[in-house]
Structures are given as structure tokens and as C-alpha cells.
Length: 185
Image (cartoon, rainbow, N blue to C red):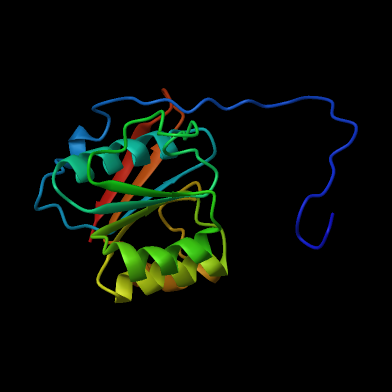
């Protein structure tokens, strides 16, 4: 390690390869159109379909005429391939790929005039601060969070309880992406 950065990995015993994919239509239950105006949080344990649903919501918002900015730090939402994106995130979407999310929030708000900011895997104080900046700046947020239930606003995430007015809980059972619960405030 070099501070908080991984410098070297040795003695590798296995690798996990995740291949992002798209499932068109999985967000149809949300009835997204040009009038959809929700701050949406998708909650689930790992590998239950959060990012796949997030990607489809992004595409639908964008194609409904909303200006969307995706903060895609690791390329899991848009699947960049060097000159374009391997997955369809919509025609009115800008993607900030490869930047730390805390930097991306600020740049998106200042320069791109989004109606929606989309981000994956909220994970700490910097993400909470970015979401709050967007929310108080009048920008809607669609995000994901690892968790097992919709009672997820504890600790560092407590300030986000005022932000999200639409919550979706996913499960792996009976298959990944199964909507277990949906709450609209």
C-alpha cells in the first residue's frame, strides 16, 4: 500500500471477472417518462442487480429527454471501450469515467447542467457530501447502496434520508434483480 492506494498485489490465488451487461425493459415498472422527477435509491446485497437496473433507469431517463450525468468511476455502468461506450446509457447522457466521484460531483454540477446525476455504490462521507450537494443544488439523484433492507439510513448515510423519495429493494431470489419492496415517500 501507498497510503490508501494499492501499489502491488502479490500471491494471487483467484480472479473474479465481472462482465457488465444490459437487460432492456427491467425498469419499465417505474414508468419513466419526461415528467418523472424522483430521487431514487436502489438497495440490495452484492450481485442482486443494482447496477443493471441503474443502467436501464439511466437509459430511460436520458431517452425521455432528461439531461443525465453518470459518475462512472470504474466503468461498470457504461462499459467504456476507449472511444465509445459498450452499453447504451441513452442519447442525453454525459459520462464522467475514471474520475474519483467526489471530483465528478463538483464538475458535473458546475459544467454540465444535469437534471439527474447517476452514481453507483454510495460508500462513505465523500459520496454523501456529493449527493447532498446535488440535491440542494436542485439536481435529482439516482444511486445504489449495498444493504439488506430499506432501513439503510444509519451512520454516515443518515443525512440522505431527506434526499431519496423513492426506494427500491432488490434480491437475488428467485433471480437477480427481483424487486422485494418499493417505497415512495
